[in-house]
Image 1: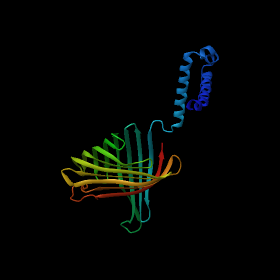
Image 2: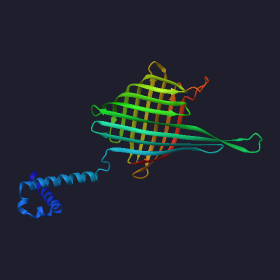
Image 3: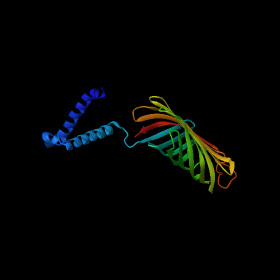
Image 4: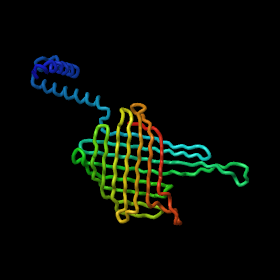
Length: 297
């Protein structure tokens, strides 16, 4: 029954092969004795393979496996004082075989404009002050030991002029596990040792840390997605000194490539950098709420 059912299909395939060979090698096709020769079967197989590769390449919208997106976010207030924050980011990821690779870059800049009366009391004076100026990036590689368990390494770099962070570089090893791994939802937890190099308030330091992290994504409709991540990095020799940072956001498709999104980002440092030459410290918490657009490549 299987042979009978597949006979018409083989006939269609044979006609396709003859068409391919006739188009590519007309003399070969019209030479009947040669077509019956064993080498003609090899040519048919080659034609089928070429057609399959061509069809696969045509149907695969992302043959390299990379998923890349660029975003531009804004925060704006107006009135007695004006605040403008602009943030740009570039994110890319790739999953193949037992490997996962995530990379990202971001930068933020903001200004506050305030008005005051001049000394003579005759006019208003505007003063512009930079209130956001930071950039950084990260890279993470995971190797899947099975469907859910993985090991990996993560590297992060950050510079923040306003928080007086000249640099902060963290390198951690991770053991991770997917608590949820579905087509439309993923939840992973990670833990591992690491080391931090940083310079705060002009003082350089380095120390061992333990990273605890999680990341979550949920495509709750065909055109909308929720994403969230959080990590905690304490100092091993002093657990009172730690960093917590994370974000949560929602994005929705405008077109196949363009999307709109709203993101809340928060960074909490239990012991922030001191102001130079004083015993006063910067704020422990930095909170941003941004809205913008993204483009997927």
